[in-house]
Length: 71
Image (cartoon, rainbow, N blue to C red; front, side, top):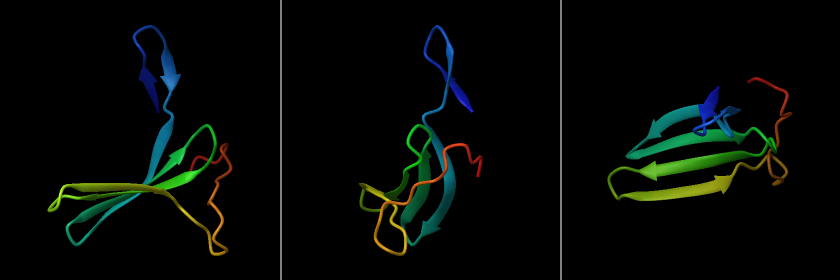
């Protein structure tokens, strides 16, 4: 996926990995395509709140994908 900055087509910085609704919240996992770091973004549509936090692995470390991985 790519975006246009007005002059050039550049690769998208973030890729959505998953999305689901949990109660009144919409929860998405996105990957930073430059660093491989995964983030959880939660938006509560009923209360109007939003939260962004790094996704952690089973040991409590930040989950980082191989940036060459397309999944």
